[in-house]
Length: 82
Image 1 (cartoon, one colour):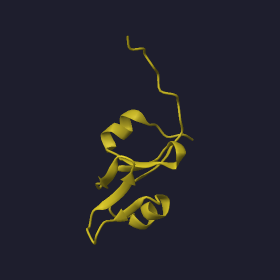
Image 2 (image 1 turned 30 degrees about the vertical axis):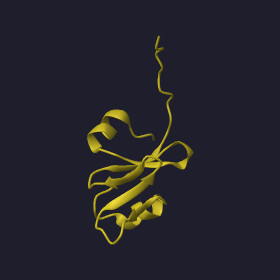
Image 3 (image 1 turned 180 degrees about the horizontal axis):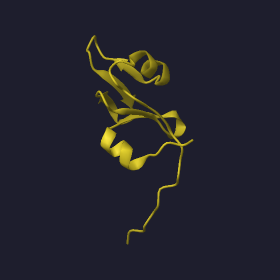
């Protein structure tokens, strides 16, 4: 029988990809790059290469793993830590 689990609170770092802050994103994310001369920003993950779209947030999570998150999901899941 399945059990119920609650996600532990964790503080992450993230940057929104605006399309104009590429240098900032590339400095932040050592797993981000443009693949084969493409104009698509890619993050290498354990699940494979994932494309980052304008408006997506690039998240640095647990164990320094990077992944993109759509803005609507990001805003429902995270809040600013002051």
